[in-house]
Amino acid sequence: MVRGAPAGPRTRKAAEPVPSAPPERSPFFPLFVSADRPDLFEKACNAGADAVVIDFEDSVPPESKALVRRIPQSALPAQRPVPIYLRLNGAGTPWYRDDVAFARGAGFEGVVLPKVESVAQLLALREALGEGQTIIALIETMLGLSRVEEIACAADRLAFGSLDICEDLGCAHTRMALLPLRSRMVQAARLAGRPAPLDGVTVSVVDAALISDEAMHAGELGFGGKCLIHPRQIAPARAGFRAEQPDLDWARNVIAAEAGELTAADEAELMHSPVVARARRLMNRGKAGL
Image (cartoon, rainbow, N blue to C red; front, top):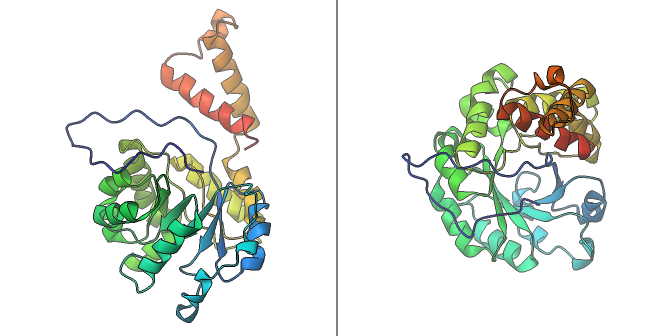
């Protein structure tokens, strides 16, 4: 769960200093499951992801949008092993208001709002939601990306909808095309003092090497996790964010040097505090089994 959410959104003035980085967290992997498959909810909750997102949007056809709000209580596990979020239909759609009311009444830990394009959308949503519910803002259009610095301040976390934004731009879904867009997402989250954003989905659910490679690329750019669409993606996505053994060995030496446990020659590795910060980040991933 994305914890430590502010009581309400805020707008940071340009002249203010950059906020302190949020506490380092383990990479976060939410698993999306279609709202019209309640038989899969409990399985998804126990699949090993960090959260489950019940999807009311892309995976549900228009004629079923209203029906899926009648989720039987028995479909949700009595004891939730992970937080459960709801991906709403977008603001301005015919289903949005009822989706928000359902999310509030059902007691979900938070919501994912697709195609966020303004702070006003987030302000209205936060006012309508229950106290303490988290908002993950999904950036899927260039208009949204053009305002992502302000949106990041009003959301609790950002997520990147790479497939939709490529359709909006008319560009190929390649690393080269998406590199500046992904980098801007990471920078916006940092400037807002928010947790690192979540990268978009990998379409393949059977190509473990591709899933792991795309997760590794996201981690290299500074993302804090990845959205998943099938339980088979969990292990390779985690593997992609896992610190390599040589990096972990280096991190242990740096941290030991900081504590004064190594020789002067070893301490030559320890030059500046960013070195220690990187070492601790790597060790955090190692301790989490990532």
